[in-house]
Length: 312
Image 1 (tube, one colour):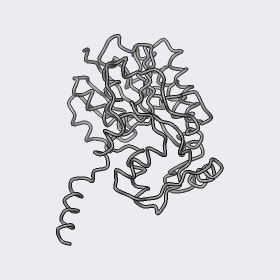
Image 2 (cartoon, rainbow, N blue to C red):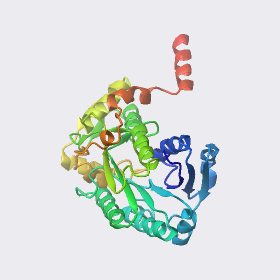
Image 3 (tube, rainbow, N blue to C red):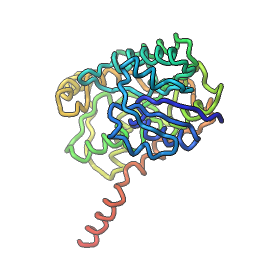
Image 4 (cartoon, rainbow, N blue to C red):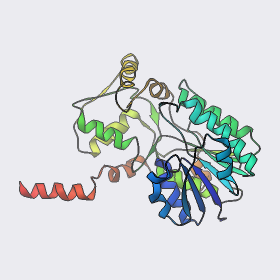
């Protein structure tokens, strides 16, 4: 394994919070670029990791931060636009700027996070992911592209989100319940990236589809979350006409829990054909194997629940 100087964009997010410790354990020297360094100072305690405030949309600043790096890792992505952060800006414009900055700074390799089925379907999310991939592939860099299905793990937007909804709602209306997915464990995604980063040749100018061993419909996933959390919340699969209305309404709710673009993304199954994990020598964790630990209450909450049970 070759240790490297790495610059990571989006390293303070969900995947990054699992990838950065994995890369640090391999001895890589890591620079995390963040809009607000002070909010993520805890990551700087990891060996070889430093957090720097930087505007990744500032070409000069980005080029300065990349100077001397062996590779850049771009984990930035959004599921819904907000304010200045449109799909076009977060996915396509940033990829264009990063390719140019890597080229100017002499950084030879780019690891690009994308999505399974990027460039397919009707959603702007998938469309712009595909446009970003095309920009990266057209560059002279040694690129590696990662295309995960929906990712689950501690702090995710899948299990934690639906578990919270199921606990609060008397009934859960579910759009596109028949959409097929192959959920993948965040630790496996991090391992795939780490193996490519640590090799001089592995994955160069290659894309990896990263998906779990179980293919489930969205309805099956939500029912497993409900049953695993010992809940009885009824789940109502919506026809597309009502699912579209649900998305239109949810766009205006605080936090935008669901959107029309999410609805359009769900019209494309997130199931792969080419096993990237097998190519990397990784045996991926199944959704059913990882789910119980994600539904366990925190240790402090368990102690409180036990105390309450004893008092009854």
